Length: 324
Image (cartoon, rainbow, N blue to C red; front, side, top):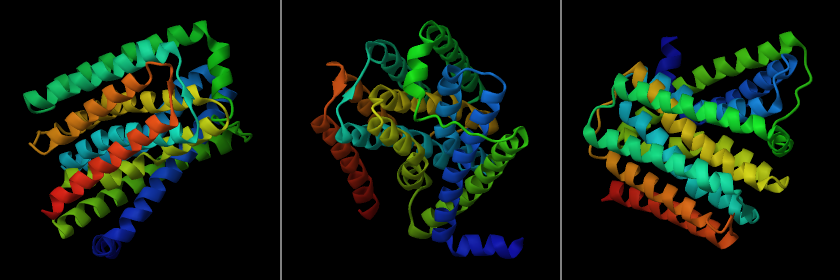
C-alpha cells in the first residue's frame, strides 16, 4: 500500500489522469445501474430524468469533494464546484449552442435560470460573510429539497413531455437485478477510488508547480469533472433534444451548489480565502449572461461562441496570474 501511495505522489500527472478517468467511468456505471434498478422498481422515466441523470453528472464533483474535504483541502473543493459551474456555462452550454441552435422553453427562462441565479447569489453572500459552516449547509439543502419538490410537482403535470425529452439520453439497461446492483456498486467504488486519485494528483501537482489548490480545482479538475455534462449535452443536441441540453447544464449547476457544496461543508467546514472571490464573481456573471442569452427562447451558435470565448479568456487570465 505504501509503494502505491509513493508512486501516486511521484507520478502525480498519471495519478490525476487515472483518477479523472475513474470518476467519469464510475459515474457512467452509477447511472446505468441506477436506471436499471429504477426501471425494475417501476419508477417513471420522469423521476429518473429529474433525479438520477442530474445527480450522475454531478457525481464526479461530489466524490472528489468528499474525499478532498475529509483531507482538509477546502480550496480544491470550492475550486471544483465553482469552476465546474463556470465550465458548464461557458464550455458545455457554449459547445451545445455551437452544434445547433438551442431552443429554450419559457419554464427554464422563467423558473430554473432565476432559481439558479438566486442560489448562486446566496452562495456568494455566504462566501462574503466568511466560513461556510453546517448552518449554511442545512439552509442550502432545505432550498434544494424545496426545488426538488417543485420539480416533481410540475413534472407530474407534464410527464409525457419530459419522458419524451429524456429518451435517447437516458439509456435502457437490460440486465438482471444482480447485474444492476453490481453496476451501481462498482460505480460507487470507482468514484471513491477516482476521487482519491484525483485529489492526490491535483494537490501534489499544485504544490509541485507552485499553484494554489483553488486554481487547480477551478480549471483542470473542474473541466475534467464537467466532462459528463459535455457528453450529455452533445448527445442531447445531436438527438434533437436541445431543451434537455440546456436543462442538463442548469440542473447540474443547481446540484453542484445546493447539494454537492452543502454535503462538502457537512464533511468539513470551509474557511474562505481571498482567491475564491474571482471564481464566485465569474460564476455569477456567466450565469446571468447565459440567462440573458436565453431571453429570445434560443441560444444561437454565435452566442455559444461568445460563451466559449469568455471561458477561454477566464482560463487565460488565471494562467497569466499564475505566470506573473
